[in-house]
Image 1 (cartoon, helix red, strand yellow):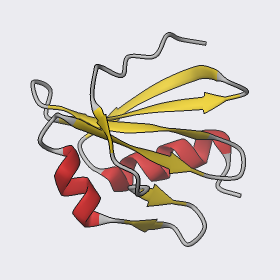
Image 2 (cartoon, one colour; image 1 turned 180 degrees about the horizontal axis):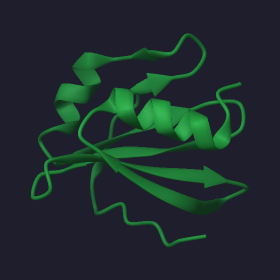
Image 3 (cartoon, one colour; image 1 turned 60 degrees about the vertical axis):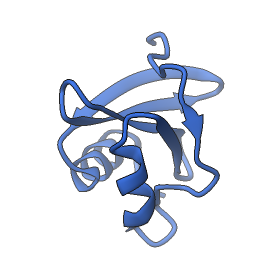
Image 4 (tube, one colour; image 1 turned 60 degrees about the horizontal axis):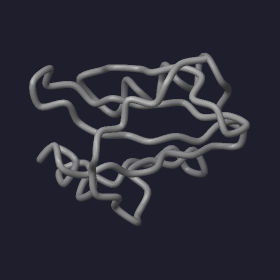
Length: 92
């Protein structure tokens, strides 16, 4: 378990990714790159928040389960986040 690292950002109402059809909304992804927004990414076994760290030039994803932040992933692409999060938490 870890503490949330989401900075004071503006929430985008549309999900950036979904495991329903393993899709990525690239318009939302571009909005995240300004470093001022965050968006949801959800699946059957987990849910969480994605934002972009401008200094690191990485997408950050916080895995939340049962109202707790369990793990934080940092990758250069959303595809890598989806692949690695699903490997650890299932993509159901």
